[in-house]
Length: 213
Image 1 (tube, one colour):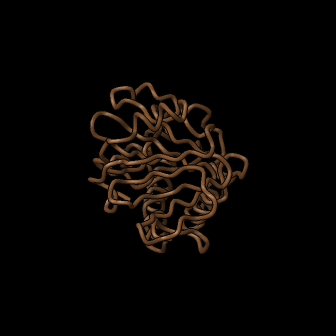
Image 2 (cartoon, rainbow, N blue to C red):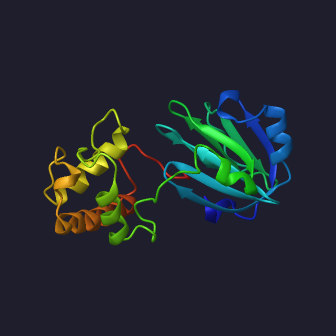
């Protein structure tokens, strides 16, 4: 997304599900139009579209979504809840599988945005070091908790990824965090990085699609 839409100016916004937004559709469209995408990044399940001047568009795909890019020569998907169109007649639509968010906020208000302000470090962020993972496990409240693989806590994508991560290092999902040795935490850290990177290289699950469908 960053490679394709950075530098483009928002010309139009279409919203078919008002509940996805954090404001009225008219206010959202008026605020977004005319702003330029500086860059796109991600953290957790959130996409961060930095807009100039001074705004952020925050998108959360919930349990999953299709976000196909389109050009002037392509037909739009039949179903979508949100569409962002640029001045060069390209853009993308968003079809949420269940429910998602598209929030528009001033950049200076990011630390007060309740849903993103407390996000932790993503698995492949440079900031996630072995030391931080060991410290997190050492000081975590409720250290008798099991490793997070239960389906009611995560969607099926995350559950499968965690299962692969644990299997690679021979850790049972019912192990208590407090019983992990420093060596096991080190092995777990390496597995998190390896499996996550490999999953991205392979393009995710068979039914998942990228920005180009």
